[in-house]
Amino acid sequence: MEEFQLNPLIPMALLSLFLLYSITRISFKSSSKRKLPPSPLKLPIIGNLHQLGSSLPHRSLHSLAKKHGPLMLLHFGSVPVLIVSSAEFAREIMITHDTTFANRPRFKAMMKLTYGCRDVLLSPYGEYWRRLRSIVVLQLLSNKRVQSYSAIREEEASIIVNKIRESSGISPVDLSAMFEGFSNDVIGRSAFGRKLSDSENGKNFLDAMADLAELLGMINIGDFIPWLGWIGRVNGADKRLEETAEKIDQVIESVIKEWLHEKGLEEQSGQHFLDILLDISKDVSIDRDSLKAIILDVFVGGTDTISTAMEWTMSELLQNPAVMKKLQHEVRGILKQKQEITNDDLQKMHYLKVVIKEAMRLHPPLPLLVPRLAIKDVQVKGFDISAGTIVMINAWAIGRDLVSWDEPETFKPERFLNSSIDFKGLDFELIPFGGGRRGCPGIALASAGMELLLADLVRKFDWKLANGVEPKDLDMRESPGMTVHRAVPLLALASPAT
Image (tube, rainbow, N blue to C red; front, side, top):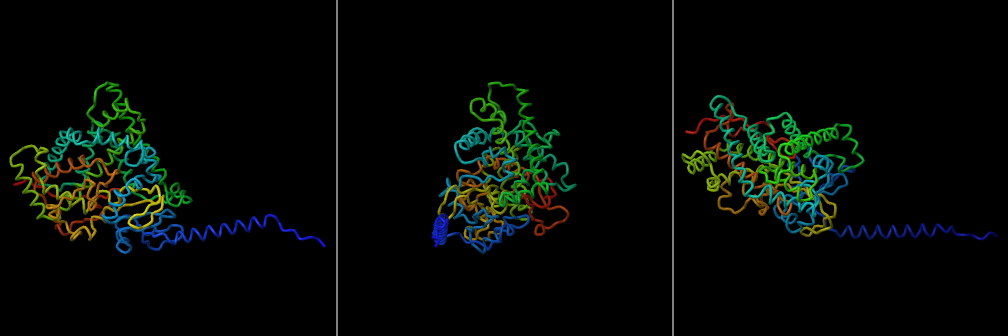
C-alpha cells in the first residue's frame, strides 16, 4: 500500500493563515480600543468628499461640525482629514502639539506652483524652513522693514483717493477693484521696485496670480484617490497648472535678470524685497528657485490677503452706517486738519483697529487655513490621531463659535474694545493669519496697508451704497477660491467729507 505523504507546503500555508488571523485579530482589537474623533458616514472610494460642497467648503464643513463636533474626522478618498472648528482644538494643534503638526501635505497644485514647495509657507518643517523663515521674518517683514515702505503705501493711498475724488458724486466707485489695485501696486513696488500693472509682462503675472489663488483653492481628486489622477489630464486642470506655473516663473525670472543687468552685483544693501534677497543669496546658500518661491510667498500673502480684508471691512461698514459714523468721528477727530496720516496717528485709532478685527473675525481672507500634516501618531484631548492625517483648521467657523462669541453672526466691533484678543496668532478665537510656529509672518505688512487706506477713505469721504441699494440689502455672497472675495464687486458712491 502506498504511504500517504503530506505536501510540505500545506503546513506553511496553515501557519501563514494562522499568523494572518492572529495579526488581524490583534489589529482589530487594537483599533477598536482607539478613540477616534466623531465622523459622519462615508461612501466607498470617495469617503466624505461629496460632503465638501461645490464651492464654499468652509460653510459645508461648519454645518457638519455643528452635527459632529469641533474636532471631526473625515476621509477624502482613503486619506484621513481632521477638521478643527473651535479655539480650544486649534490651540491643541498649533501650540500643544505644534511640532507634530508642523508639516504640510504636498498636494499637486502646491508642488507645481511653488517650485516644489520650496517657499516658507509650504516647505517641510526642518532646517531649510527655519533658514527661510528667519530671512523672511528678520530681513523682509520685520516692523522696521515694514515701516520703511510707508512712503510707498502713502503714495498709493493718495492715488486711490484722487481717483475717488474724480468720480465723487458722479458715478459709483468699484472699491473691490481699487483695493486689489492698491495691494498689487504696494506689494509690487515693495517686492520688485516697480508696479506690475505698468507692463504687459507684469499684467500677465497678475493674471497668473489670480489663477494661482483659484487653483490652490480647488480639490484635486488625484491627491486623495491616486488612481483617478487621470481626470486632471482630461478636464484640462493639469494643463492649466502647467501654464500658470510657467507664466509666474517667466515674470519673476525676467525681473531678476533685469535687476542684475541694471545693478550688477554691487555690494550695497537694497531697499526692495528682491534687492535684499539677492544680496543675502551672495552669503547664504539659497538657490534661484528658493528665491523665486519666497518672492511668490510675499506677493501672494501681501496682495490677496490685504485686498480681501479691506473689501469685507468696507462691506461691513457700508452695511452698518452707525459703525461707519463712529469710525469717521474717531479718525477725523484725531487727524483734524492734518494733511498726512502718520504711524503715530494710526496707533491712536483704537476703533479702526477693532473694526478691522471684527471684519476679520467674520470674513477671514483664508477661511480654511493652509493644511497641516501629522508626522506621527498623537492624542489630542483624548482622541487618537494617526500619522499621515491632514489637518484643516476652519478659521471661518471658529469666528462663529458660540462658545467663544456672543451673537457671532452680528457685526459688533465694540466686543473688542475691552478685550485683549488680537489676530497675531496668540488668541485662538481669532486666527485669520494662523498661529504657532507656522503662522503667517506678514501680519505687520497687512495691517499697515489696511489701516492707512481705510483711515484715508473714511476721513475724506462720506459713503453710501450705489444704485439706491439699502444697507440691509447689500449682497454679501462669497466667491469660491483659496481666498474668499465678494461674489459681486463692492460699488459705492463717495462724496467729499463735510
